[in-house]
Image 1: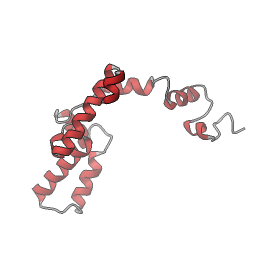
Image 2: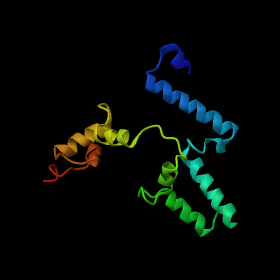
Image 3: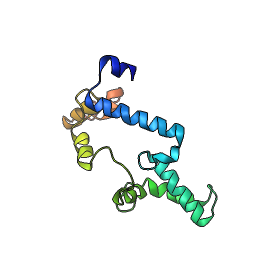
Length: 138
């Protein structure tokens, strides 16, 4: 915050700093208050609801199943996506933003370089760390 006050930030950086401050204060005061904003708090809330409803300990297989179901990336099955469909989580970006970031990474990132190498048929991201890409293996 001192850096921001002395040098300034871009609008996006200022928003991120505000969100970071909000989360730190929420974690200090009452972590459960962040159930809409913080992924692990949302998952913890679901797990505790299931434990309370069924009277099971944390080590119970039902809890393990909930843990797996929360992270299921299938938008029709994943519990996170169910929360999202019911407007029970806050999002910082849209699906379109995510798709755009996947196809147009920032210019100064390794993701941009790896994408360009793949497009050119020059190798894979592991090739960036000294591995051989398809064209180098011969």
